Image (tube, rainbow, N blue to C red; front, side):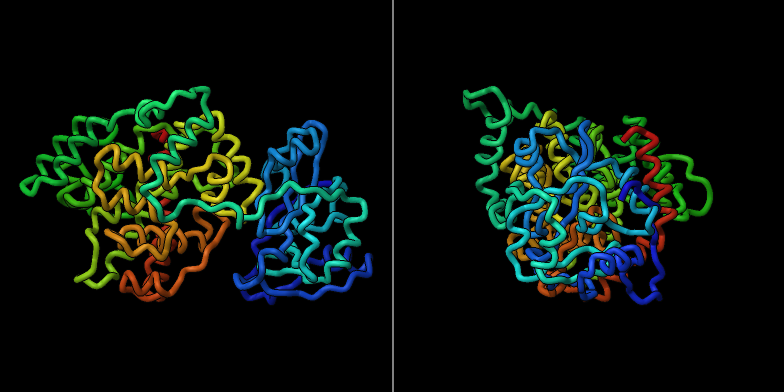
Length: 473
């Protein structure tokens, strides 16, 4: 593939097919194959993950099973190079030229040299991306091996089974975070974690809002007074209420007007708290390519959780405001990682680009020994945030969590998985267990309706999100 291409979305009513260029290539090579529709039930050890990398020397095609993650450090040590995933714009041009949606793991398709993980040839058959979304090529491994005669075999990928993120042992978080910090700093004298991390104090505005949250006598005037002391926050609340997403009648003239007529006390107090915390740590400048921007993901997740919460029967419905706040802050650990490990955050991002099939918590566990969920949950407790929020951040990737405040963690888990199915928040998709719906007291249909309403309002929601990008956040 000498040059890249423009993406094709395809027609939902068109029967699945193998791209014509792939059909021609397989015919030319006289290689039989079967077309298989993608399914979560397929064994990831059989699935060939293709990643095009480059450096000053040139491009290199890396092939490895989806049951593994590509370790860039191991590959670079092996090759003596400084390889990273090619820029997305270049890949899109390459793929668009042949109307492909993704990069097939077929070395003859590209003029680049190829290296493959040894374990790729272990299963009796392999499954290769066809270049059309949802369509795979199945062929016997010996046939696939015939495509690798000019490729190099090596060990540069790590089995995901060897990487075990700490999903459900919060008592170990402090020790694991301290160990990770010591591993990545020159300090060898054990310090208090709070000193080592150099985390900024809880913002003054956030401290005032937290006090109002727990004050049963707090009024609209109280929250208006706090918000108005922070001009940027006040402007954000007013523009939020005036956005097409809320379709408020008439012009919004003040913070009090925004609260009384449109947003309500509960939403504003949690929205203001989420904004104050979100702006306490700056957004990293070097994020992963194709990654969903921080505030896009935060606001989409909060909006879906808002709809899911309304569908939960009243007797077991968690507090709406706290649920919304959990959505806004669910990815706060991402900011913490960038703040605490700045030299290594870029490495995490490059691994996310090289492993789109792998959830970020596996990559962070592999590279740092901790995950953003551990960091975010710990910081919420350090800042004396509500325990419901700390729990939501800490257990958001554990659909089986049923401990204290499980509804909040379960809501975040469900919302983020529903959004990934719609292309928001990453390509790695995980199944939604029926037990998760049951624990929340809602049905799969109700959940799909909730996320559907948010996606239907996408234009208005994106206009609202754009306010954060314009303000530099």
